[in-house]
Image (cartoon, rainbow, N blue to C red; front, side):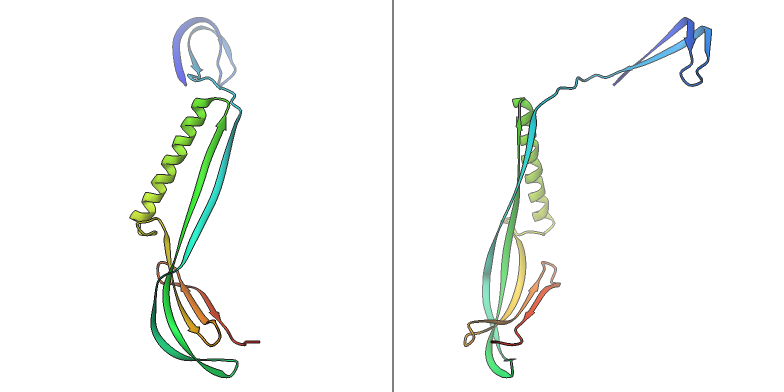
Length: 166
């Protein structure tokens, strides 16, 4: 917006009080410095993620566990799960310059967000959020009877325990 002010003489109406008078007055006008352009446009957001389970898995111990009154030998396995998400934003526009600028801005924001996640240690250097788990694996049963999952800060997010096997 631009604002122009001029000093004039004659009949005028005060815009604040509505009074009309004759004499010296100041006229102030504003004008937009841009034009509105109607553009047919569409923004599309696509979110995808993938997860890698059992990363850096290590057997850290053995323990007897009881399920449904029967005792089994369980191997304690600690591992990581890596998850990476991506949001892709695309623009379609009747104005090619608008579409190109919007795509460039979206790509820049995505890259900036990924750098911040690594810098704040919320992801590893490959861009994956790393979560940790500990499971008690019983070969005789073919699976885990107890699983504890932790967030990147070490807080428990999930606790699953097999109580009965049918």
